[in-house]
Image (cartoon, rainbow, N blue to C red; front, side):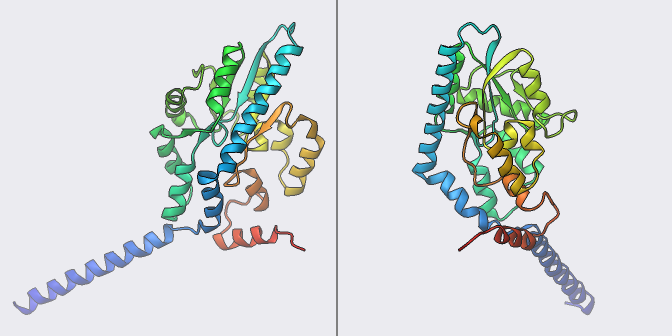
Length: 272
């Protein structure tokens, strides 16, 4: 092998080594520390308690609906129930588990890909309750902050799971007009229906007052001021994995590093 050939070969090997190092550094840069999520995800995915809470929640919802059906027989407006989708009636736990295992962050593109696979499972008790409500003449509206490009996948998933009356009128996704606020969509439903129940895993799923509460203290104060609504008109499902509760801890600063977020979480702990 000539000197020139040896030089070209060495240069090629050096290029491959540098490319491998660059690829490794890029992969490391894309990884995030999701370890703090692991306990919440494992609990959601495996615990009998989570399943029991879900069934309990929908039993309560049925009791409240039956009470309204008995006590308000002469009301002229058609009844409606508003439900959130994610972690309220559809379980995204496999998406969350994949992020923890692969040490990757949540991104819009990654979540859109998951949604459009239409592989979410039903939250225990959700299908049965909403089918019962529909059988009693109650209109079900699905108000979600999933995006327009995720609407078809969402509708396909809901129909596959057996949820009732899923169509363009009842499935209300986020639009540029109302951004992440659900209040305009709730008002549009309330203009033609009497809303008996609202169900969600995030306080923002229930009323505008919660959307305007941006700190841990103000969110808790808003709950105290509206405590008579919970269990009667507002029905909450558990979600320790993500939500505005977490954003409030971070001060809604979405540019914090993993280290800064960890410090905020630890700072929120109150021991004795």
